[in-house]
Amino acid sequence: MGHKTHPIGFRLGINKDWQSRWFAGRGQDYAAQVFEDLQIRGVITKQYAEAGISRVEIERSAQDLTVNVHTARPGIVIGRGGQRVDELRKAVERAAKGKKVRLNVLEIRHPELDAFLVARNVADQLERRVMFRRATRQAVMRTMQAGAKGIKVQVSGRLGGAEIARGEKVMDGRVPLHTLRADIDYGLAEAATSMGRIGVKVWIYRGDILAEKHRGQQIDEVVSGELSGVGGANASA
Image (cartoon, rainbow, N blue to C red; front, side):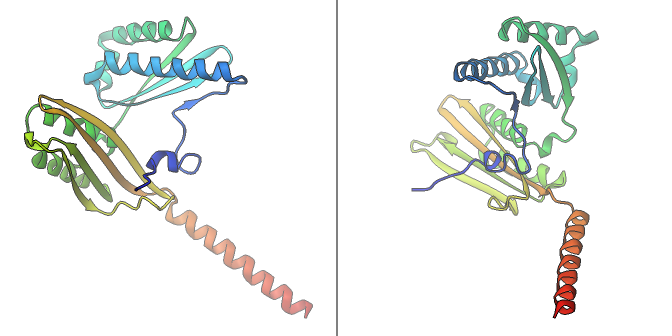
C-alpha cells in the first residue's frame, strides 16, 4: 500500500508557508476559526470561479482580519472602479461574523507556473470534451516553455468515456518530490463531466529554493571553519 505525502505539507516550515496564519489559545477558538477560514475561502472561490484564483491567504490579528487573494485575473476581482472588491469585502465580513476585513488582490504574473491554475485549465478543457491526452500535453508544453524545470500531470477517472476508470500520467523534465529544497508546487482540480468526475493532479518543479550564491557562501564558511580547526589542532599539538 502506497503512502503519499502532500508536497506542500511536506515542506511547511522549510520553504513553504501556511495559508492561514493566526494563533488560538483554546481548542474551541481553534475549531471556530478553522471553520471561518473554510467559509471565507468558499465565498471567494464561489463568487469568482472564473477569475483564476489560485489560493487565499488569511492572517488574523487581535482586531482585524487580512485576506490576500492570489489571482491570475485581478481585473475581474477588482471590477470597474473597485466596485466588485467592495462587494467581496462585505461578503467576507459576513462570513467572518462582522470582523473588520482588509482585502488585498495580488496578481499571479506567470499562471503557467501555478499548479492549481494548470490543473484547473486541464479540468475545464475536459469539461468541454477536449481529449485528455491533448489537454495534458498542451499544459505540459506551456509550463515547460514558461521556464519550469519539470512537470507531472496525472488524470484519473473514466477517461474518454471508458467503462472502467483508470489513471494516465504525462511528465516532462524532472520532479524531485523527496528533495526538501526543491520548489514543488502542487494542485488538484476536478472535472465534472457527463461520465463522472475526473481528477487532475499537477506537480511543477520550479527550481531549488536555495540560491547558488548562498550555497557557495555556506560552503566557504564550512571550509574556512574546518581549516581554522585543523590549524588550531596542529598549533596545540
